[in-house]
Image 1 (cartoon, rainbow, N blue to C red):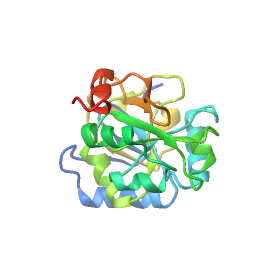
Image 2 (cartoon, rainbow, N blue to C red):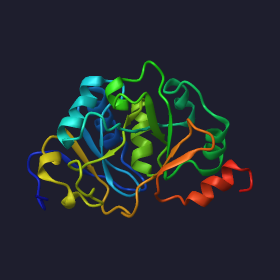
Image 3 (spheres, one colour):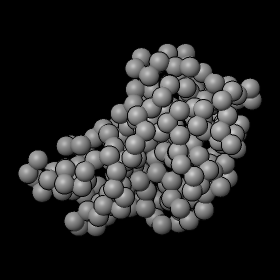
Length: 220
């Protein structure tokens, strides 16, 4: 059941365009401690932990009631961070990154051996996105490690673009909530598997398939 008032999780109101550095530093310390954090992305509020800590990733699955075979994608603070997460960056992926990042595209790569298996759901693949939202960007810059990019909801239920839409079962387990006000809502990121040629659009989203194909084909 969504809550309109919260007394059990620290909720910090933060400017969506110019996030306060003290709040970001506090949020970064929570991620560094392996604790879960709720933070804004372009469309929905997300549930974030340090993606390189398997116990923290397990906590995300538990909070959401998410099947362990369902991979969790990650956000990164800069494009160069991809190299530590993947085995190979295909040419098509470079074209998409150059033409359409940052923004609403999650690219699915072959995961590097160091990536926790629970993050990939045992698939050996990992989804990666470079976000646009200023608060998410500031948080990632502060932590300098990938964080989980999954909506702050129970598995199978809608995500929330306002804090008062988030379920008690999720929000009461967060160590901190960054409230940047109402988000845009709408579709999530377009998920593109770049481990195959041509890339396969696994989930339609905010970036049209035609735009992705045009960039990959060099006609954008």
